[in-house]
Amino acid sequence: MMLRPAISRSPVVSTAIAVLLMAAAAADQVRAQAYQTLDTTAQTDVRLLVQRCQARDASDPPKDRVRCWEQVRLVAPSNPMVLDGSDQAARALDSEEKSTQSQVQTKAQRDSVKLFLQRAQEDLLRANFDGADMNVAYALEKDPGNRQGRELSAKISTARVWDSRKQLLIAVGAVVLVVVVGLVVLAKKLSAAKKEGGDVATAAPSGTAPAPGQRVGLRVIDGIGRGRMYTITSDIFRIGAALSDRVEERNDLIISDSEQHVSRFHCSLLRRKKRWTIVDSSINGTWINDRQLTLGEPVALRDGDTITIAGVARMTFLTL
Image: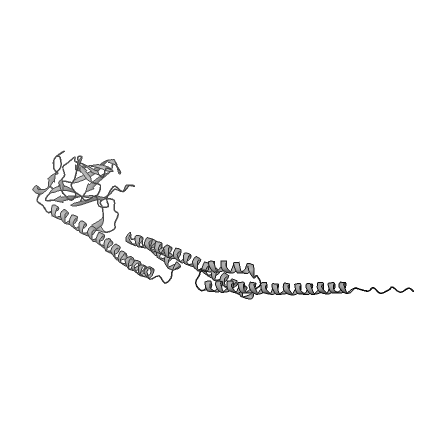
């Protein structure tokens, strides 16, 4: 086995190597110091940025706060203080957006309630109580504690009561008016019937007046009951459409037409002081020889006079 001879180094080479090693170590130390300086500077910058964002947290809107922290996160994305500040700013922004949305909804709700109450007021003025109640109900559904809505609801209830009373008074007044008019007409008839014969109006003569005690009758010559003959045997002969079992409301000649032109008690033939008269009490009128009678005014009858009942039937007054 052959042995390799040892390599001997000259002092110059050894010195050069030592110098190079020392230079490398110095460079590493300088580099480490530089890195340490840079890191310290960066940390100082991050602290300053954090302090600035924290100061803005106390005064700036959430949107500006979020923007500030986002810029710091670009420099120090894993810094706990940066992450916490960014999270708080994001929550503040979310809360502000929700609050803004709630305010918008609240304003829209107030406007809607105001509109419904305004409509309810208008309906109340027009006495449209159902519409007013409906609009108030919509308003209170959106705002149950609305004072104006509750007061308006009470006003509507009161107005309903007074309107019902008013309608009742109107109905009672109408009935009283009808009764009064009926009494006036009846009084006028009775007064006219008691007048002297000279006070009785006369129709256009078509014949002679019946002699005292002479029997008279009616012959229907046209319309309902045509051809029938009715003999008058009492001092009062009533003509109309009403059927009644009561003597005082019974018609002697009943004319009932489908269109109800004939009144319930249309007219009456009366014998007073040996003279026959006719009195109209109808709505659609009675005619003697084509002359319309005045309501409630007695008119003398003569043999052969033509009586027309509301344009429905015509008959002749005859002495028998």
